Figure 1: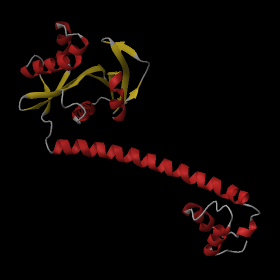
Figure 2: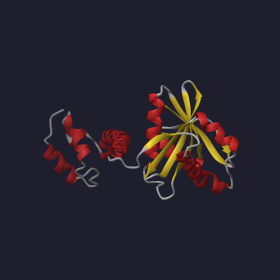
Figure 3: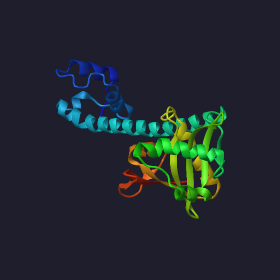
Figure 4: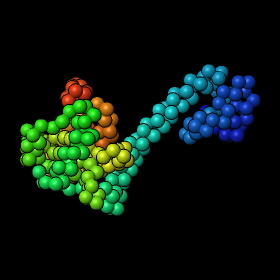
Length: 234
């Protein structure tokens, strides 16, 4: 085919009765990027549409895929940066492992009762608390006041279960839980475990999914409310 200058092609489109593609940049790019085309080579706008529509559809899909990939990449980067800044600035610190039956442990139990048990009309038994003496007890403090806590319990030589995640009222939804999860994952990984699992309340499953956890199995009831078993490979 003979080459048709782009300006002539634009004028031809302007003079066309329906002006289907008036100056749409992607179409102009497709038509002129590799092959020059004469408008006279097409008998109707339908033939032009048959050529352009698949290319335009491909561009739209490609654009959506690229935006989705960028969103996922930048969301993870922002989460990592957020956690790193919090640790660098020493916010919500110190996060530490505490001893069973210590003063700090009693604060942890009180926080767990207030956040996790009292709203359900439940409490801990002495047997429940005694079982925690061999667990890793993690808590965040500020001026000797507990801000949040969680427990890591070994399931087998490669798997640890996260339990009793609680954040003080007023700090929920402000990044405290994300920081504690990062701390718990680091400890789990450093001690040679390969997987972290949990019984997550249905209402907060979305929070854990954003951190890379996946639902494994069907919904079940625990302490009177719906839960999911969730896990993540470290």
